[in-house]
Structures are given as C-alpha cells and as structure tokens.
Picture 1: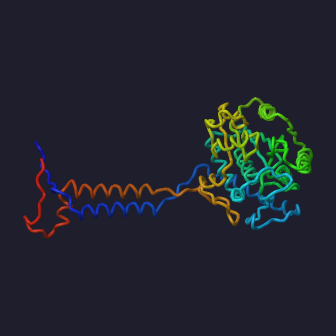
Picture 2 (picture 1 turned 180 degrees about the horizontal axis):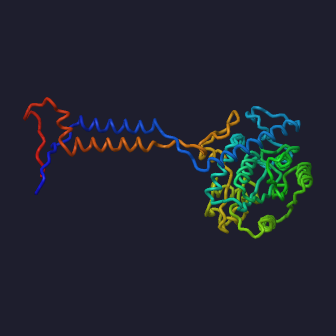
Picture 3 (picture 1 turned 180 degrees about the vertical axis):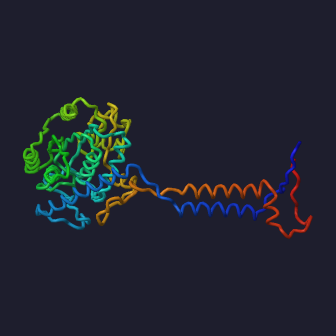
Length: 381
C-alpha cells in the first residue's frame, strides 16, 4: 500500500530566512560559549612547572649576587635569566622577544607533553644537547625530564647567543652548578664544548674562550675540543652510547642552535620545532647529532622557534610579569561545546523537516490565508 504525504510546492522565502537565521545564531552561540578541555598529564605538568619556577627563583638570587644588574627593559619579569646584547662569550645575534618568551615555567609542562607524545616513559634514557642561548628553556627541559623520572645524558656548550646566558661570570654551566648545589636538579652536563664557531669559539676573543674553558674545568666537566666537525659528532655520539649503558635512547632533545647538535644553521631550520619523528628531506644530506639520531629512528625534540612553540601550547609571548604556574593552553584549552553544537544541529534538522519535508511549516507561516488564495500543499505519493 502506497503512503500519501503532503508537501508544499515550494519553500517560502520567510522559511528560508528563518532557517538561515537560526543556523547563523547557532554558529554564534557555539563560538561564544565554548567549554574548557582538560589536557592530559596535568599532575606531571604542574609538578614540572613548579620545579622550573623554583629553579627560576634560585637563578634570580644568583644573578643579584653576581653583581650584574638586571635591565628591566630587557628582562621585565626580572628573572635574571636574560643576558646582554654582546660579550666575549656571545656566539650569534639572538632574538630578544624569543628569549623573553622563554621566561615562563609552564614551558616545562609543554616539554612534558612533547616527551609523552614521543613515547618517553619512566626510566628511559634521553640524550640532551644544550647551549647557553636559552637558559630558561634548559631549566624547563631539566624540570620535565626529572619530573618524568627519566635518565638524561646532557652534553652542553658554554657559549650563548645574545640575550642568553652570555655573562662571562654567569654562564649556563655556572647556573647548572648553582641549581645542583641548591638541590633543585640532579641533572648536569657531563661534557661540554666551548661552542660558537666550529664549536671551539674561533670567533671569540681569547678571554672569552678562556672564561668558558675555566668554567668547564672548575665544574669537572669533560672538555670536548675536537677540530674536525665529523670528529666532534663522533665524540658526542660515543659519549651518549657509553653513558646509556646499553639501554636504548628513547629521545634526543636539542635546546637552541648549537652547531654540533643541529648540523649548522641549515639543520636548525630543516627540523620543525617540537617533536620530529622522521628526518626532514632537507636534512638528509646534513650531518649533525639530530640528523644521526633521527636516522636511527630516535624521536628528535627540537626546542627552537620559541614563539611558535608558545603559540602551539597557548603560552604568552614576551610576558611582562612572571606567568603563574598552571596558566596556558598546555593545561587547559578552550574547545567547542559539543552538546550545544549537537542541540543546534538537531533543531536545524527539525526546522528543515518542518518547512521542506512536511506542510507544518507552511501552515504555521500562513495561518490566515484564504483557501485558494495561495498555492496549497499538494499530495505526494
């Protein structure tokens, strides 16, 4: 038996306007009333960020005691983690806004997120390469690694680009020692190079090279001083292999733009900031620690392009006051309210049915129409 239903010959403009208006209203409501989505690993992120903040506080005191004044225009948070434009240990010109952006303990939570995404677990060995260019990011990296109870193997370099740890009497390797002496971190570099050109500070004045070498010697760190670039890489890889004790290396973290780590500037640009699970095509012909680990199937975490990282994790650029622990999209992110979106979708579908599929909408919009005055719904079989 065939069913008969009624349907208007055409949909009125009024009905189309109402349907369109409700669709626009629904879109506005969904945009204006988002929900908040809790990001994973909140406890670990909070712990890492708090540990980083403790380290920041210790370095702020050390900077004050060093006799080197803090320029509030350069370092508005007065963290003591930003240096000067140039010095005898300055390797390259750096971006001040990028350095200012790192002064945020919540970057430690971002590093936790990246390590988790890379599959790093408690007890895993993580190889690390740091320079003095981003001391705050070094701190956040150490905080994340210690919070997750990994086994980091760190190789550093003493030089820094401008606005980093480029004060000759307060290098990154000095900061490491201060943080270890204050029982903030157990993590420290086990070997270090001078850094800068050819990884040996060839462009530095003699007093700059001697200052860095002196700090390395005082801290009992192995000095890396190979002349050939390939030998520089081999020496570092051998240290990672020996110190791993036969355990697989779960990830490699590079902080900054150390030549040995990135494979010169081209390598630094070839790898994207954050997690790299494959070697980029542009880096295939380069040689650097990142490229070697990447080709061995080890996830590479590249902590550069800081402002892009800040945007990705919902952290502010160049904060003027010290951010509070727990702030930012790395902990909570605004998200569309799915229940509200579903309700609006169902209502929109109902309106489409009423005004297009059935004659109910037709009757509602023409309650006083005389019979035959307008085109009435016609029977459909």
